[in-house]
Length: 349
Image (cartoon, helix red, strand yellow):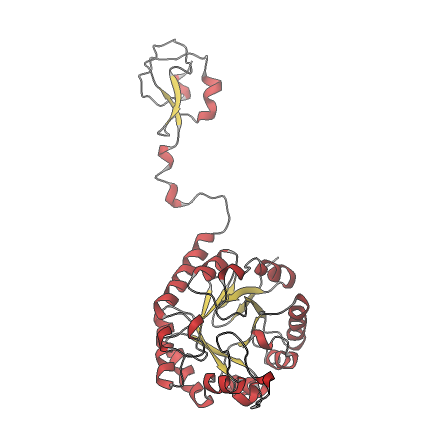
């Protein structure tokens, strides 16, 4: 069966180099200049794509003082949802300039919409795909609206049950044909590496026949590289200029040099996977001569018997294969054989 793939600027799937997405999110810290600097940092790190998030506080929540609308724990403890999203949102009037800059730097650029108006506006900007965030995977109307554009959907699965993942996929497939990728995600900020459970990707790929990857909030490059080794085709990581600059997402974002290591590590991990064939690689050609083979280890006069005392399997590999030793022992030398001679059938009577 053909492996699933999607097209976002280039083919993405098991037979192609991993697609690394730099997530801008709130790391612009309210500065368009800083947002542009992160675009450059993503390109310089070798990322393949830049992703924004398109929302306003009003599309996310209510400005309400009830306890429901305040965060009781975690990195945003004590903050109101409205205040957090007001700080974190990327103004709509920045989008066109950031998209153009990213494209000029060779990056695929798209966004996570959080309402139908955002989908419509992003579609007009020519995004090649849409990302559905983990928290929105249960918003089936949002998924249906994005799917109707017939562009690929990348959907994160943080917090989702098997039933919720299946339902989201059914809605996406019934409303569009752009293709689907699922990103295994742990919605912890940051996410503990020991809770990452990368084997979950195997289940997602097997049960849903989709491209899989990870949206990762853990430190460093360990999880992305390990994920590629298990078949991840998409890697998403948050990017900032420096964690010490602060901001809502700083604690689970990578700095530019770390992101470059993710890109490099994922590429090398994918190359290391190979195609699984039994063909021996070119790198071994020079080593074959030093395998064991059968050599005469003591001078053997013509007509004398070949024994385990005068024939051994040693390095290098110019003689007969070691498996022939039992067939040779007890036979006689056709000619005199000098010590250190690789044994061959023409020397044996």
